[in-house]
View 1 (tube, rainbow, N blue to C red):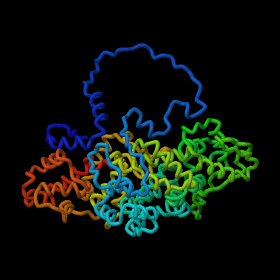
View 2: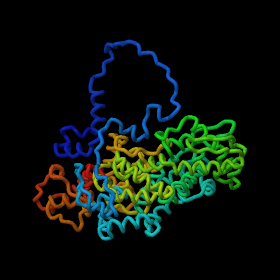
View 3: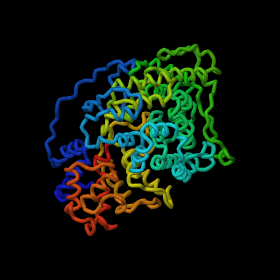
View 4: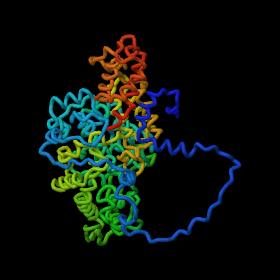
Length: 589
């Protein structure tokens, strides 16, 4: 990795790159402190006293007593001071909240355009056209439209989706289309998802699809989903992303991809597998803080026995047109006798009635106050701040419970809350969001071989640590900034910005770098720099950072743009634009 702190980088470039690297400095500094001393093979080894004896202790009966954290994100954020966003007012409408809320927490982002702030949170990245759209329609009308995604034509995104035919296939169709156990369909689904995130007009819907895919995570790709992975997202997540969580949970717990991913297809009354029963409590619903016990986990697993997968995967069957994974309730595998989990009890007397007992249990968990609280907090972390206020979380949780576990009422409360509108700049784009937002900011369009180019962007996201849907463990991608401190992700992000500005991925349509300021003031070097900042980041830079950009260009701001190199198709613009995207003005949201 190139060390951009050396004198050869130039003082102004160092200043801007140092700013772009904010948040990872502690990592690199620690690494440097560890490695800067010379290694000596003849160094004296100092042997200290032996470690103290381990003291055995009984395992905690309740997960909440095990000395851990209420959630994975909370563990990442432990010990890090959080910025409090204090305005807890709930307004009648989102537009009223936006107009009345003052931003008091310091940030380098501009705070004078609520539409821009809304788009940084409710989409995968604002564009100039989208800002104009919100200004023209108004915040309330734009949100109402986004909450009714089927009312929005989405031809471009659907055209991109159509270039990944495996992504739309049922398990049976996948089995007939690819070699057994290969991951082609799952890779295609992840890439098609990336295409939708970049080009869909239904941006809030795609944000919520991504949110729920992480909450009820089935890693795609993984060995469990070679045939059923696309179906899980098409039939479970997308239909319910703005609907009922109860319906989504019921669908997830009958889907072969989830059942195989968490080994419930291997669970039997005589050999109970606890994976799904435990994750259902810890991750999908009530959470550790609810106080469930190890007995509850065991009973949760008992209730889910019998939920299995019926599949024809033998090669001879496939050659004859075999079928993919499908849900099957196998009554003889179901454990019977009374079960109790938290306040849910059932006599569970028959094997044949086990599926109905499980559905009743899932409805109980979906409607539990702890589930409401956990989902509300997780959604507030995604859209508001890494440490949302308890007041906001409680309001959202109550809206969830009052509506019978509907998603839209939670979003309604969130968008009408002062906390959202006061939180400008208090979230950082994760790697996937950076990839998508960069493509949207540059204005990249589908082209002659969109699928090939999207595949390349998919692997860029992988290098940065976050390709769509691919977190391997059941807890989904983390959503707080501390989890994404990585010099590798930062470096690959810089390369990504250059690739999009300079058109490295064949198959897409790119605007020429010199065209990015078309129609904007650009007669002088200073005007050109300002216009490029506004084009890509939708705001101007502070004086210090603007001066760093001007020093990088190496021209007087009053000098004419003509002949400066900025107007040359192969000149400075192709290097200046990526540097702007490297800055915190772009990485904050």
